[in-house]
Length: 188
Image (cartoon, rainbow, N blue to C red):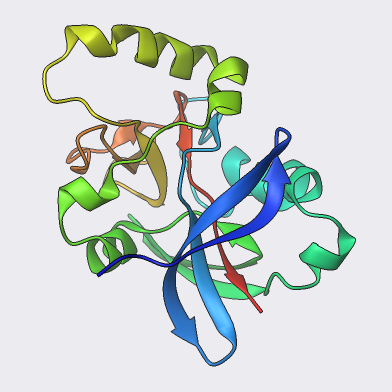
């Protein structure tokens, strides 16, 4: 079955395409089709949390303001999130967020479906993504870009991410590395 794609907002001068993952009444859960940017989960490799992450602040601040006009922002739902954490569970209320590993497993059961390409504008802005793309010819089986998930691994300075082959980084990845961002949101 073909996944529904809608266009909503603009980032780096390009319309954003979103995959529709779920529906609840008039609301739709969306995930960007491409990796839109690359950011560090946290700038320092210290105890991490979704609540205090730099990527959460960026998504709900600078990204939201850059990607959506005032009318579009009113359509983005405030969502209560329950995020797995090594010390229990965190609860936050966000408009824009990253998916958890469990959500990715639910909506993309096959690793091939998790593979995402970086947006061209993201590659211009992120040295890390440019370096990654320049190395692609040297790797076997690498077809996409890595992207952060919001839940943390057992270690306090590591978070989960999806590797470029669609599998999960099984041991977590240090939070102070710049990795891909695929924003998610509930749209009214």
